[in-house]
Length: 511
Image 1 (cartoon, one colour):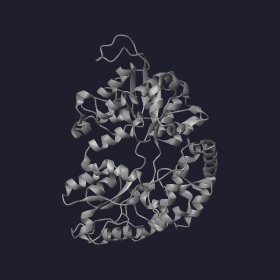
Image 2: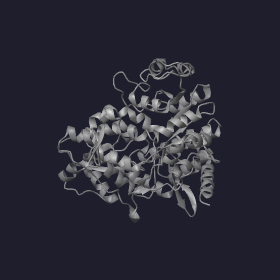
Image 3: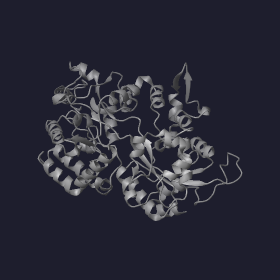
Image 4: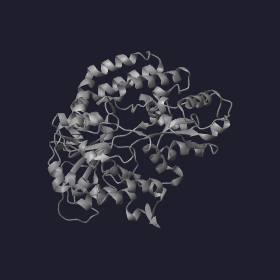
């Protein structure tokens, strides 16, 4: 099998053996053994990242009731391949160039997507959507289709993000009470809380073991503080946030206000109010420090209330966490960067002969099959409606959480159902309240068009430049004036071309 050969070239035979055990090459299937079907049906090979969700014993990505439900409903055998998560995009590059039998690839990397478009490595999907995707076409908003359309050609099925922002501030109220503090609102009040948490033993254990503000590598968990300077900032990309200035779109990472925000964070670090290990903190480190009681103030994701915050409350019954207003800076600025409506791209390689089958799968998974997958198949008793209200069994949901692997790429716009599901997963976690608070405080990205050619060519290196420069400024290894040189480098290394393309697309879309 070509996929097996490719992965062995990558010298990951141990993983590959687990990934590809029991799979053969491209062939027509005689049907699922359990289905009792006679006759053949087509097979499509799809590639997606493995986000670590666990299957029940005896199950895997190709043998589970939800994949079988999709396969039998569309009369297609969907064969799933999970490359190792480390270096996922690099693995995709090898797969795309090796001639492997691949019919669909899911990625969350907009730069990679547009790079493939530039290389003419992707198949336009307009005809297949018209022929096999009537429900799919209706289930995705036009804005999302616009984000994957280049020169009139649709090059991906967009996975829609119904939660258009991630970060909101959470604080331990019991720590505030211990120190006689009120929940902070202004930026100055936030700094005072950080100082008290870092210096005055908020947990009362007599040890100097707490931090003022928890952040992570590449400035994750810092967006609300950039928002207090009016900057929509996302540390994972230097090309995806745009604001309007004097009738032209300008990249948010090169704004004068961004320099001010960096100076603010550098001052916090110099005063030892930010976790000294922040530049090394990956997301699991952040969660561990929250859960263990080392931190009492951080920018949480909307779902952290049933993650590290819940773990901390379990570990320490005295812990009481509350959400905060976003920090308000000078001129009343506050808020958090809005996420893109498109959270992923499902593409069909140009070499595939199965575009119609791929779209047929999406048409079902985004349409008729979406609710049974999201809320659980009847036999699993994951959800039910009582007096019109959705109720979910949290234990059964977790047991079959692997079904979300399908929802990662098959994600239509169904905000009402999604909000009902948030409430049903546990009102005590306030998931819907968290999402609503975020949605009411978004700093919108002014550019909603597709990634541009120069983004694909230069986006990765510009993001690396931004992350390295901003980290050095905050840590004080270079002065804040290094930001001015960063702006010049950003422009010279592709930012100028990206800006021109973004403004050209914006003008076309707003004629």
